[in-house]
Image 1 (cartoon, rainbow, N blue to C red):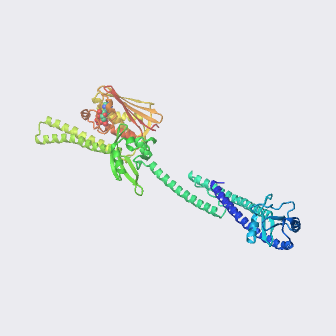
Image 2 (image 1 turned 120 degrees about the horizontal axis):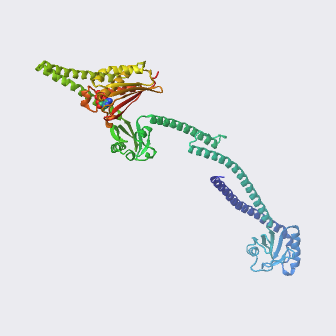
Image 3 (image 1 turned 90 degrees about the vertical axis):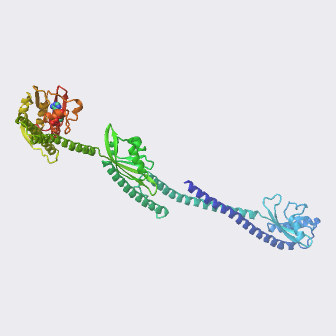
Length: 584
Ligand code: ADP
């Protein structure tokens, strides 16, 4: 039984007991009065009926014996006690055999003295030697006071019996109530336990449970309401979960880094892109961004947005892992009904974009510069020739300079066009099958003149002999041509160049090795950049454009391979590149 129902039951029982006690007091008193009134009437009646037999008798102590006989005779037929008193109130005779009349005590008996005074009187009082009270009726006659008395033990017994029945009935009523109430409580308790279980389930997020409605009473109605509530909650929570999953999926697949800040400006949430951008981990949660990203500009943006001001596309420069990165940041505050709830910071990496912009700017500047130099030279010599034509030898010298510069211009434009062609999406590889040795032979032959001028030789090594490849022949010709040309340009006269082709699984591996001036380690990383040259004047002198290795790298990448360089100053340089899946 629950504490509440126990209390209710106790209060109910208390009320019943109070009612019964009050009822007992009132009813018993009423009954007692009624019975006593009856008894008074009976006594009066008995007095009237008994007195005539005493009329005329002399009431004096000397006649006590005779009187007593008369009184005993009266008492034989009835259960009354008869007593005669003289006018002084002294008992003369009594019907109780062996019982002395209330032997002349003073003060006089109350009923007798009142009768002497008022003519007649009743008295309800204790009598020595008796357990229950006696009711007396005394009436004054001419020469005596005649009193009739009766014990009230019968009334007391009757009242006790009534009281017993009353309590028995009360007991039965309470027991019945108890049983009925207990049954009722058990049902209510069972329902309560089920409700409690349901609510606990709600607390733990289980909204699928339902209350089994067994009755149409209030418990049943409450059960129905709980079921409706559970259904509503379930569908609302499912909708919320779906919404949350959708948002989570968006947040997790976004390329942009997202941080959600709470109203205190601490990190409440961040997505994987943010984790990648700044290497954040779970320990960042609950901290202000400045603590984990350490960038004053970002904190400025955070402060602005938390103050309720949206920040649109602001660029942030951060150094991460020793590298400069550019981030485009956007911050939007969000608020509840009135108070601010926090801000959302979205940032995306624009480093590559900025790098590309810079490369493009540099490229345009470089191209302009590279084109301008030979063009200025040509213009200068042409003007000189036009203004003051000199002797034939000088003219030839000038013309040969003009020729060299115009060739350089031509080569530059040719390389630029090739580079843009390779870089454009339109470049299509045309694979064909050919012999590796033949290809190398052809490329070497193209450079015979150059080689001879520097007294250099090319050693070829193809392993296995007769190796055949399937690849874009033109692309490979360009790659090998540029590398051999460089080997000649930067090689020492009289040395030899080694061009090799080998097999590595399904891949072909080429290498071009010279014994030239070599490249200092600081330059190695950058020589594949467009227009990057270790020694600008030497390159120019050799007729270089600074684009050769950029074209080579792009072509190797288009063939799916990789190129690497190994070099030692004044010893020589080796370029190696692979052409995957090209072995036939
Ligand atoms: P260039 O037209 O100037 O040769 P490249 O792109 O072919 O341009 O090469 C870039 C630079 O790399 C050259 O200017 C040169 O300084 C260096 N380089 C290329 N190949 C070699 C080599 N075999 N030996 C030494 N330096 C080389």
